[in-house]
Length: 555
Image (tube, rainbow, N blue to C red; front, side, top):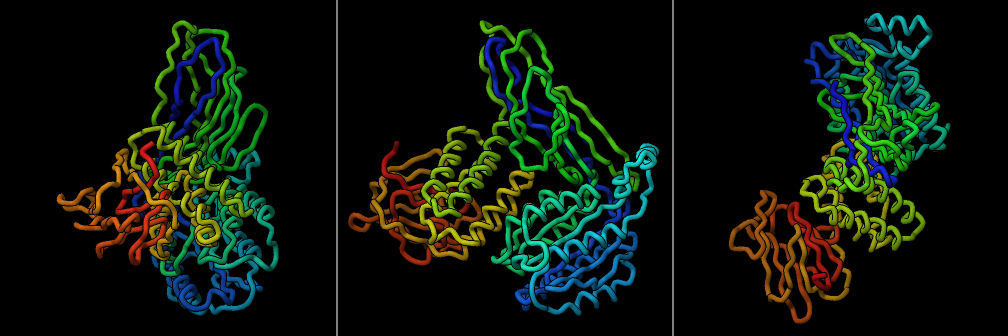
């Protein structure tokens, strides 16, 4: 494993206090070949309540059978289903008789209510029962002898996969209590991944359980995606090279911990603050962004203001070895007369902007839930403006900025746009950003949301200026055509853009946008154009990956 850190700047003046960001990073070694991987110990917990009837249950069965096909005799598998009752359909055991397991999966039938907690706890029990002592290295054996019983969970990659499409209405239903229980199960070596299908599940509950349980969260907007999500989670588990990753920060008297910008479970012990980051896959990079306050320092030269400690269980050739890496966090202190503020590190700035955007989304959701769409709009707009003003040439930041601009329009339309679908998408984005997951799944969900909607007109003032990609154009012409061909007024060299994609035509005092039968469509205000669209100040239009903003003036 490779671990390091970077500061947004490491040169400070002795005469003034400072705020610093520390970006801690760790990268997993390459994933093992299939024959050398760690065995899996999985319990799949499936909602079989009445709302799962039809395509949902069919796709779930298909996904569970996919898992079984890709597991081997060294893996252990169990299947639990629940409605108002909990049933163990496949008890924990090695994956040898696959036909009988698949028959048990195929025999699942829908039932009544949703006892999510009962099904999940039974799945945790199945994983715990299947745990065996791994082939241990000497230091792990010593730890077990000393009484650290959680170490018996090492050697296998343990996971409960919990899938539901509805609200928990039987058993334990409180999100905080279930989150606390997931935390406890994670400490016992049983992590939980949650999957929500459709528009009726409680996303706050499932993200809380996934965060506290050390697993992943997936929003599945369409039942047809269930097998693909199961495949993605399986690949993640097969590629695990490190488990029980924690990063601890110990500050010196010269620094103070302010906050983490991620959302990892955190605990304090004396002067240490410890964050639990879960499993690490092959070649995966996990990051933790911390904010520190540094008061006026007395001495000059290199000063250690904190120490970072990375603890994890490294998996190599069926061996599990506990590793600890320590790094001093140092800054260079100079006299005030010698101080010139250095440029900030671009990697740290990027992480700050993306994580602050996630916090902005969370705050915006809280306001939107109360019906305060104006404040939600302002919060998201400020986050988008911050990314734009940073002026960094980065593809991820461009994507984040464009997503925020479209989300602003959603909030401006209030209850006409803010619904269960958009809220779940926001929640999924927040989880991915704060848990160092790539934007790919968010982008798929966003595109599907936009395809499912029609563009909504504002009915406002006709715009005077078009802005995109640090460019602007006064809208004085009678016709403006956008596309991939070089004879267009605005040329977008993207494969997803048609030769002649869309055009804007002046009609009296109005500007009318129309799609020119493009292959992938034109989107306005986060919905697909299905006819002529009158443009107004504040509209955003997406063509391929390019976002166009229509404004009143060039300022």
